[in-house]
Length: 122
Image 1 (cartoon, rainbow, N blue to C red):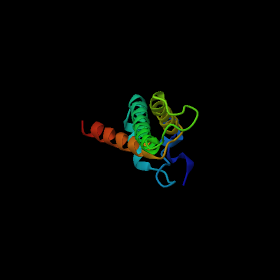
Image 2 (spheres, rainbow, N blue to C red; image 1 turned 135 degrees about the vertical axis):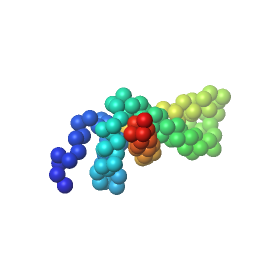
Image 3 (tube, helix red, strand yellow; image 1 turned 90 degrees about the vertical axis):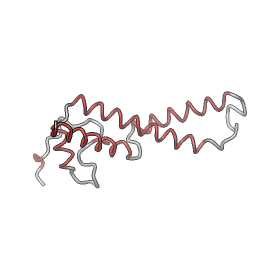
Image 4 (cartoon, rainbow, N blue to C red; image 1 turned 60 degrees about the vertical axis):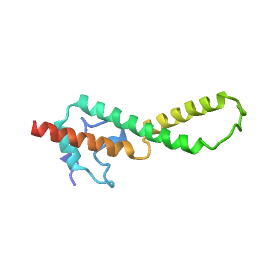
């Protein structure tokens, strides 16, 4: 494969949103769709998909910690539940920003593909 086939200069800066995200192979369909969608819409789709993954991860982390009692440095105080919810929220945001578990890249691809279809038919 020639290196000049895809112009990646205008693509998303995060590695989770690259065109080489489909089983380690270039996603030419996504690359073509990205050419039709404005950079502002791409940035908005990135933020939306990352926020969605953070929400998903927050739900997962909340379920993981829901059965924990007041052990640890805060003991069994009323503030422990509030502190734990804020902690899981920050964990989920950081995980999603660092690349997450792959949900954001698929949501991003779907959003871009839908927007490209809308532009073509409009």
